[in-house]
Image (cartoon, each protein chain N blue to C red):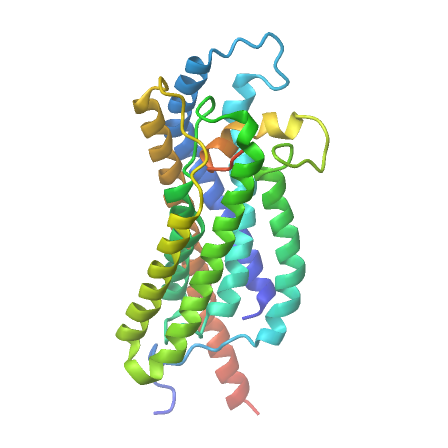
Length: 69
Length: 241
């Protein structure tokens, strides 16, 4: 019978790197910027002036092991 | 399975991970943070953000956004890794990738530059500490990727087990040298309470364990559930015409 239950031994289908690349570049840049804003801005370097971000995320930064001050 | 669907799943898993790590940190991290601030003698008359906000909404915002960012980056790494690490299935790939990333991105850098509570570091060295920390994370990731590539190269010749051992061994040897070479920057003040430091760092590691474990499990379940359907769909489309 052709429609037997498929075994999980089917080789996983790779996503071609060509297809991943644009996502990795654009989404990667956005996600890394987010990580920077959460963890590092208004610490050693500042894109936004002031201390509001730093103070608001203060506890999280400490617990995430970010060197914030 | 497209990159877009993986990315959406990664972001959702990241939100779940962020919320759980928020809960964990509130329960186990905040007490140590409070003790550290008491040691510092936090008597600022006007705070920009009150302690009440910092320890609840502020903490949660930071951790959920961090979870989302990590979840998304995890999904991108998964898109590359899936089908390329031996013959691991969708769930095993998620678990291995999450465990590996926890060690490479967080635990190894933590060994050299651990999390510090308020008042345990010298403010004037923040630039140096930030730079060194980022360099270490980057080097750790690059070495790990290099080791995986080497393991893949060796796989056909030495078998899966030896390829994993050799790749892991290379990473371990190389990162040990890096950890020894990088300078140690800050030591907490001599009278900083050791129990507070210990509990804070334990909570910091626990927070990451919760985060990566949630991402690995939730993402794995999502993806494993979606896969049979897409496989069945492709079989149907092959059979139908």
